[in-house]
Structure formats: C-alpha cells, structure tokens
Length: 300
Image (tube, rainbow, N blue to C red; front, side):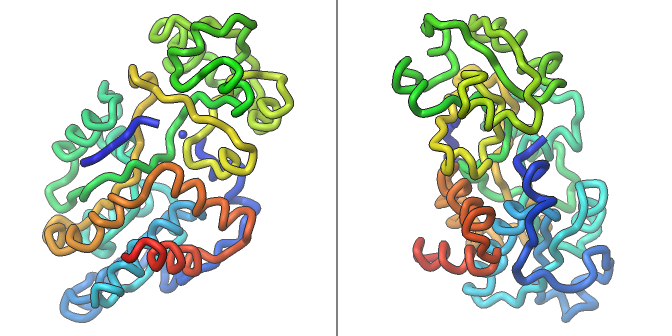
C-alpha cells in the first residue's frame, strides 16, 4: 500500500444540493444474492448517497466492465448501518470505503491514526466475509487547511510549521471541534501550536478565504480546496485519523477484483479526488461521465 499523508465530510454541505446523475439502478435495499442474479457472475457495486462516493463507485464499476465483468449498480444507499449488512451477506460485492471511518465502525475505541497503522488494523477487524484491497492516497478526512497566500507567506507545508508563524492564529471549524482530541487542545499538545478557536460551522471555508480565521478544519476531498486555491497541511504526527479511499469487497472475490481495482487505487491521488469532485459540484457532470473520462485519461 502506497500512501502519502496529506478530511462531518464535504458531503454534509453539498450532497443535499446536488442532483446525482449516473448509473444507479435497482432497489438499493434489495437482498437478492448474487447466486440468484446469475450464478455468481455479476459483480454488484454499491455506493453511499454522496456524490464523491458515487464517483468512486462508478470508477470501480466501469473498470470492472472494462475487464469483461458483468456489473450491477446499487447506488445511493444510506450510511454504514444500511449497507454493511448487505456487504456481509454478499448481496453487494464492492463498495468504496474510507479506512479510518470503517475501522471505527468495527472498533470504536481504536487508537490507530497513521495511514499504515489504520489499514493494518482494519484488515484484522473486518468480518471473515469481507476484505479490503489496496488503499488509495486519496482520502476524505479531517485536515488543517490554509489559503495558498498564507502558506507561501509563512512557508507552510506541515501543521508543525504553524509553530513558526509570528501573527496570532485562529482556527475555524464546527463548534464541536473545540472539544475534539484533534481540535485546539490536540493542536497544541501534539504540535506545540497555540490558536484561538472560532466555531465557524458551515461558513468555515468562507471565513478562511475572507481572513476571519487563518486555519480551517476542512475535509481533504472538499472540492473547494481546488476552487478556492487552498493548501492542506501535512500531518506528520497523525493528529487526524487517516481515512483513505479503499475498496471493501467480498473476500471470496478479492483476488480476482484486486487485479482490476488495485491499479485504480494506485492512480487515485488526493488531488485527483478533489478534481473529480469539482467536475461534479462545479461542472455538474454525471458520475458516469466523470468516471469514464478519468479512466480513459489514465489508460484504465
């Protein structure tokens, strides 16, 4: 697994206002087994009701079709409580997931934070019927993010570099961040960086761009990272739980699926996922069109 440290999700703000287009089909809560759908030959790909997750699911689906697989799509399912039972029972074979969040679903008290540690622990906590393939660099996890102008002015690449900033620092984020272990207290205890806190909520990015705050808690797949020219600060001490994009699959199909999906994960960088999300939120393209164009461009 090749991972680089670089993100509620951007979905909380945007998903409600976007009309998802794509290849969703069938009843997302259906429980008919693959054996009943054609002798186990059909690969069922699912997704959350979240544009970014559906884009990745569609990439998986089209890659599998390109490899000669018959694919059925079950998109726009709810949260893990809704789709995880379907994965475990085998009525869904492939689902785009996020390593840290998935690990916490199975082990709420995990102390793993770094990408490799999270992935390793996740593999041991999954039910026997499931497996995870290679994880992508792309993630959808918390980050501390600044404007490009602020980063260049203060030579910022990592969260630890904030300790060298001479001007007062103000961290913006959801009100609950004030008490989270990775909030202001964690920022100081892990990196020695003192910052005032402002509960900016839904206007966090707007406040960052306006200069009301100079550090913001932004998810790493948020398309505004590109549209507002923001810089995600690296997190070398793993203050945040790593949550990289990863295919969770039926264990009995994992070897066959890995041949197709591991090359996809290898190409799916953090910057790429943001770019793909921009094509949905700004360009208003369908998940199917976004996936097709990207797979073609990458030779996949």
